[in-house]
Image 1: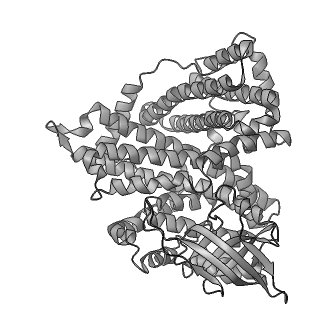
Image 2: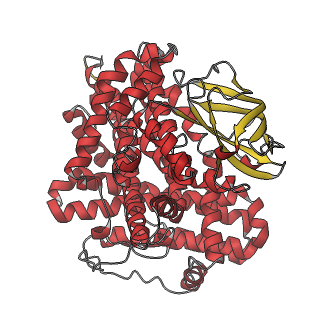
Image 3: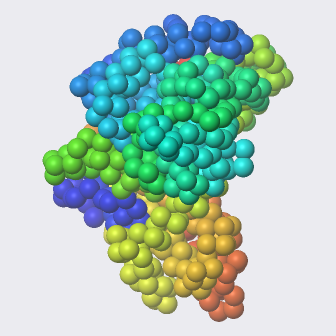
Length: 597
């Protein structure tokens, strides 16, 4: 297929597995408009001037400090990017609101407080509240005058959110719901004014309520002592015959799960954005340290081992950014499509996020793991100094770890990725089994490589196509073999999810590289092409391993041998000197003194 592929309809969620994407229909970060870039720069400036100089004070939970910072961010419009103007927000598009999360993502505990406030602290009311609820709460949440929090988790219900024990019962006079129970790990809990809290009405109807600080029967516990994000307020909430006005029921009785799970779709993508922002700043800290640190009479940035670390940071961040904004644009386009069809703004964005829930889950996993890798290697670059609290990289290392746990653990999100694909296939939303059967037939034939190697990026495109075949072959055979038992084979499901994550990332990177090359030529995109080709080369080996592990877990005999040969064929990459590519990548960052935010 030519790089001048004709215009095509935006793919549905998960459809990239079975259809080819066009580079020229793919949004890339280089296409931010002037206003979006200005918003991103404003976020960076806010961190540099208001947050980073006082990190020690923030970590000591200085009374009133975090609420004042959140309010100051609100005064600059950073809390209301996605909120409609009628409720005091800026009414910006989804890409811009994602950029705010990335731009503030390098602010350590402050980033956590802001993300919780603008996401789970505000969006449930904005998207599910009555008009009177939105008019009462959203303008003050948008301005930062009031701060928001979210109470879902309980001591005995983490990933199993619907197992919550907190109860709600309508009072005899019908004026209040009486809540009894406990919530834990509540971000912003120590200073929030407004809480979205989930409880079961009459013991079984999972529902949501808006609770204000000061309601009778509502108290909070002391601040938790945590491994990281020490400056983020985290407390338990207690409800002892807490009186909640009946009009503070959020949404419908028994439909609390709709609120919880829909908000999580957006939250997962936004967490990826914040993690990316944190990773970029941590990488820059490490690059600058490597340049100035001397050993054996030379900067350690001259050593191949250090260059390898710096290059891999850049590769992972650039690829993450490519996948993140590709998906953000899909959500933005779908939101506008639904608005045009007459959907109200809340249903439009929630519907768009649900459409791409598979990609949001994958992004949450990858973004959080990229950040963990970057800060871990950052500590290693710092050597012994990285283990000292005098160096900010140690804080970045501790703060990073929570991201693989909240917004759904990475294990849960991997399982959800495959579960959602299979459920959509069963409901007819995705035609997965047809292409999977075609791949099974292809295993019995001579390989057909399709396009000529004279075509631009033909080898890379073929590799991506083959990665998808590896997923379809493995997943299709696993479903056929295990049927309903597949839900209990979590290891196999996670192998398939990792194949999908690597493939989506690789394709996102390639599409971005193709589009940039069309604009600037190969010589002008040497950095981007080195990143893309290195990632594809490494992804081939990873997908091969994930595929083999899955196949060996459910197949045997001739079937096993045939599929192992298939996954070997589908992940065969051309020889590539990744060492030299990584050196070129690292040299650019070292010469620039940074990875550009």
